Length: 190
Image (cartoon, rainbow, N blue to C red; front, top):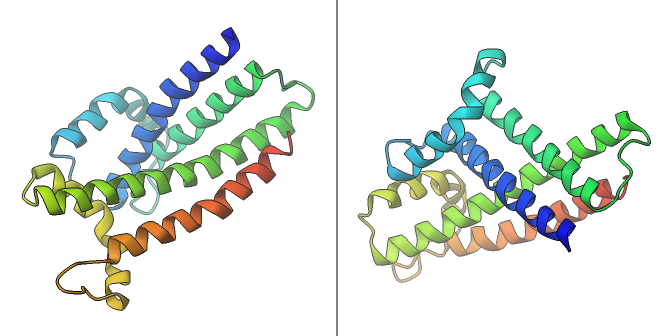
């Protein structure tokens, strides 16, 4: 029981920071402004890890590579702690175990990125109906607009109702199926 409580706390706390780091990466990648409450919140809670990493790791092709690498390492550490608490022998072949943990963490980052996009899509859709002029609405719109743009070419509005968010939501849910399968396959190597 104590191991389950520790596993929950580790996964919740470290997972929260992984999501924040990924959100920061996506904000920078998608050119979303950090000049809002949500952006200030993300920066305030992730600067402790990102700023030292930026001194050592340069950006790559305009991407915030230090933030992504910190998220990857933190997710791998989370997985190592969780597998240790579950009683897995992580010391048997340390090189292979580390490689598998980082592979699972990489798949998790892809999965979490899809979750972030789903969250942004739902918030943007709700705000577009309830409060379209909300300052935070522009943030979420900037996050989902690049993904909705190609869909809007094929799915025109019907009676002034934009169905492209619904189509994107279905596509993202379908994408989660092979990602979950891949994660299970990689995790099976431990």
